Image (spheres, rainbow, N blue to C red):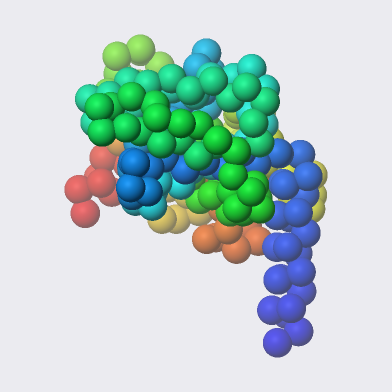
Length: 224
């Protein structure tokens, strides 16, 4: 029981540290009747992106007052100016246009809840074997550096995800390959990689994941 209490305390401190350096921006996309819509949301001019859930809710961090959100819903391509808002309830009309955009106190009060579940640090969130082959990368570290500017990778293959704080202050990300922890990104042969996902929220892995997770699937592992 004591060990669990210490772990819970450490986890709370880690999440608090993350929140301190990242200002949440929560949103809701819905139709005129208030039904949530599942959409892709990108911050124009950046690789910051997320998706809304079935309830239409989404979360991002550190959104600037002059940022523009690009929405992709079915065949619709819409843009919403943030205009200094702290949150955004976006209502799409039956004609497929933006009906209204308003601040919402409940969304602001949700804090990091939607962000921790849904913010993706790279465009697409995933590096695939097709990308690696198309661009001719010869090692995984170089491929990740090119595709995700949020990563810092040292010569030993340790990975740090910018913006993910921890008790250890910028603890390295946990590297998982086919469900097994590996000590270095250099231990993975790039020719074996099927996909790599960068996860800022590593709470599913407990204290080991407070610095985020680099989740790798190999070609052989993906077939299982």
